[in-house]
Length: 414
Image (cartoon, rainbow, N blue to C red; front, side, top):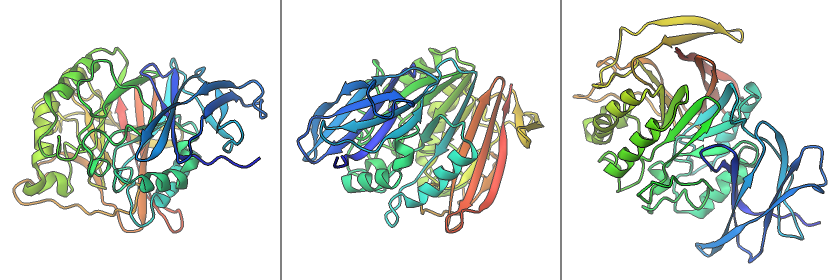
């Protein structure tokens, strides 16, 4: 049988309850397709659950999407077929909505005009090998260099097919994802349910997994929110969303950092957006009890001290050293505000610390740790949440030989 090769095939969590999964892809042919999920022992797909795709036009192609209800905490085989041909068979593990332990990876800024996602492969393959318990991947924005170009999405997803088809991807939008389109170019490439009370054509949403609530915000919408903070509708949605959950842990993902020792947080010419976000969100995060905020945009790693409601760093917050799984972690003890983490860079986008006169973030004492991204390196953060401990590993790797350059271990205990 001839192989079926849909373009930009992605797998996501679909709904807030983490009981449904979204599949999305494009075809240049006018074909009717279906998605098949089955037990790992049914390699012939004779007992597969079949879901027909919905079709719509997108830039001269057909966009296919499907929503599949799957049992939590189970391994599945899945594939896409047009009735005569089918894709490779993929394997994935679903999240148990009631799990007591959850591991996830955070990537950001994989955009790369030269290699088109090939460097990202070094990061995610290391993450899934080193931390095989990972059930979800979060992306902090700028997946591609120009979100309006379908060819870039096709190349990045094909070069990283092993990630996009095996671990559900949950992205937020970055400024490169919105180079020319204001209505959310991530919408065509990921099938994620929008909140019923969302008022804008922006990509923001939330979901629960185990004891963690994830709030995914949109800061990178070019010429819409960029440099001006968020619009009121999204801020009010975030307040409602964070207040609606009783989960033990609250995690936020947003592309633009509120605090950064790089050029987008420290130079006066670039500081309007992070300053606006601080005014809008510091109080919201502190009041809601957000534990950690992940972001990207500056292509470096940074970890702040706990940030208080008024935007100051809490230097009095205690830390302890605790051994977990054979490694020592530096953990903030019941911090009075969220810790902000820039997760580094998953593409060919090296960046240095670049503090500007008049807004020197380092001298202001926001940061507990900072790591530049050298040339030839990629990085990610792997997170494990279990009970009252959130532990994180920042891993910086060389692409040419896959060797570790730096590993940082940190987290929160409460």
